[in-house]
Image 1: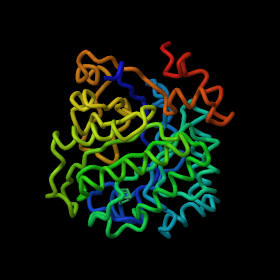
Image 2: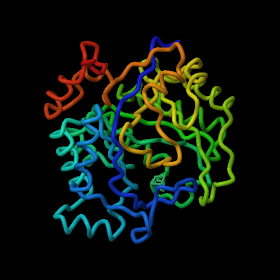
Image 3: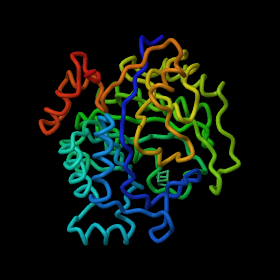
Image 4: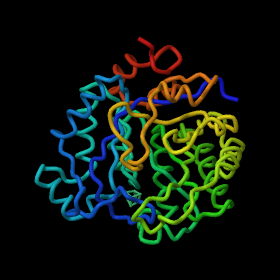
Length: 329
Ligand code: SF4
C-alpha cells in the first residue's frame, strides 16, 4: 500500500457553464439565458483567486462547459471583450492567476493541438476526463463525448509534454469491459508519451432533475473492483485518484488509490455542489493511520523533468519542497 496519500489545495472557478453537450447526468450545464448560467468576468474571478491564495491554495482549477464558444451568446460575450476565442480568454485568466500566486490547471473539454499548445505555457497541468470508451445513452446528445475525440486530445497533450489528468466515470451505463478498455487505453497513451500523472476513478452520483436521476450509483464493491483493476493496468507512476466528497476513500486506498484530488477550503465543487469538500483535518480522520501529503497540481516527477514553462518557474520553485511536494512553511 502507498506510504502516504496526496491531495492539493485549490480554488474552483466555473468560468462558464454553457456547453455544447447534454450529458444525461449533468446539473452543471445551463442554457445561456437560464437562471444560474454564468460567464465569469476577470472582475468576478479576481476576488476568488485572492481569497484562495490567502487561505493557502496552490492551484486554480478553471472549468467550462465544452466548446462554450459554439454557443452564440458566449461567443458574443467574448467578442465584446475583444477575445477571438475561449482559449485567448483562458490564457489571460491563467496570467492573472499566476500574478496572484496560483498555478493554473485548465479543464476545457476537448481541445485541438494548437489550443493545447497555446495553453501549455500558462498551465502547470491540464485535464480531460476520458469518462468511457464505451457507447452510453448518457452521451447520446454529446458531440464532444465521442471517445476518439477525447483520446485525440489526451494524445496531443502527450505530444506536447503536458502533465495530464484524466479519468473514468463509473456507473453511467458502461460495462465492466468498457471500464477495463478505458483504463487500458489510458495506460497505452501513457506508455507512449509518459504524461498521465493521475487517473480519476469517479463514481457516478445521480442528481435530481436529470434524465439519470433514478440510475443507481456504483456500489462500493464495484468501486473496489475497478480501483484494483486500475492499479493492475496502469503503470505505477500514475496516481489513482478518488473523490473524498463523493465516496469514503479509506477502503479504496487499501486497494490502490493514492490521491484525493483537489479539495478547496474556499470554493464549492461546482460539478457536484451537493457534495461538500472535507477539510484537511476531516480528510486525515477519514484516512485513519495513513498519512496525507500535500502536492501541487503538477506532480513531483514532472517538476523534476522540467515539464513546465519558465512562466511558472518561480512559483513552482517557491511552492515545492526538495522532493517536489508542497513545501511546508
Ligand atoms: S458534464 Fe460537462 S460536458 Fe457534459 S453537459 Fe455537463 S458541462 Fe457539458
